[in-house]
Length: 231
Image (cartoon, rainbow, N blue to C red; front, side, top):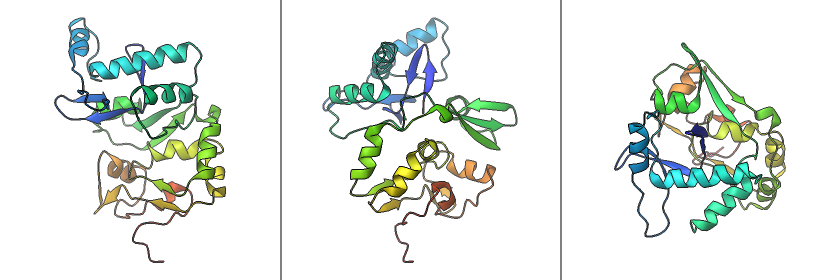
């Protein structure tokens, strides 16, 4: 998810958390605390919008990212710099270096995904979705190289439209993935007709898909192997 908040871009290195206060957080380094909402509380006191709460650690991350991007660094380079500073051993690659935003169609009109998900608590029926900026997106060479060298490609149980969908929609990604020799395994985000987390089941129903189908195979644009599939 990306969201422009108080002039800063919130991006996927942040993770949702429900404790000890609702908001979006940067995972702390080993032994570190999760931060406090002191900066956010003061912003609210100044009259800033308060529907997208951020902790102090998140704000530090977004300030640094925004500064680096404004200075001409790519999102790939910025992400590598931030993960090194946070002692993250895994390689984290953004799907592209260009800005891409998810727009959902609701009865009250189009809404950005952060507005729909965070501000509106995903309560609006969704009849469609689109990706602003996706036509200009390009596949970073690091992503293509990772697909080529992967021992396995795992599709995690995230929302097929607003999490996996944008990645699959990056021009060139699907072809590179299809050419990769690694086996592909997908974990369904739906169990017993309900989303494991978030509004995936609502979006599936609103967009005309069968929520009870645990495979959601059409959203992957290609037949991966599903855990437990004996065929």
